Length: 238
Image (cartoon, rainbow, N blue to C red; front, side, top):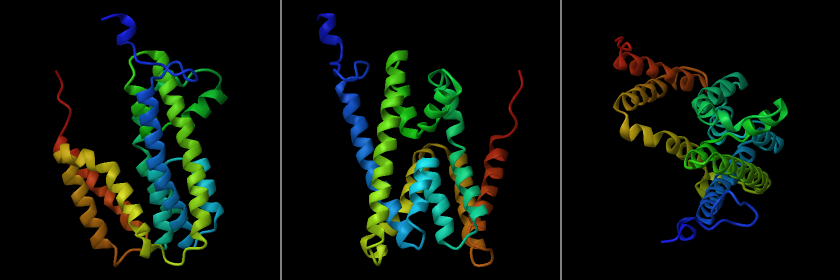
């Protein structure tokens, strides 16, 4: 077999990425666009101004955190509780930043722009590539196309939300918990300490909901992390 037959077919406009990778990125963007449209529609039909989900998507650009923050607001929680919930959920991106730190080079403004494209998907596609050139291309291609498709979908969804009287009738109310569950489900299946901590946190949040202001039970659920830390125990020393 010749070396040319083993080399993936490269596209003309993105010479560092093969067609299967670009096709996978397109499918991810399509799926996220559907979620983004739901986010925009629920936010506006729930009573938030149209500019809130639109600006949030441009400035924050983190689907899980946006869902968490808006979910707290729609439940009647304070903006402070909404921000705290979003920050806690977005903390998962911190180790992702270390994993792709080599891609965030150049002047400060370029590093800032590239860091803004850091998502679960862009990091996943970057880590699939072993060649540095392909890693950078996968990260930037996925991040940029996802940013554009997500924000367009949120805008369209928010515009449609002004005309939708009852999003619950369309099942869009399930988008918030479904997205949050999808973020944690892979870990819950494989990590027993994490699963136990999540169950404890969920139990605390449900029990506190009738007694505490909206948004606070979500923050109280973080107490489940104490169980995870105790189960893991101290790090052994050699």
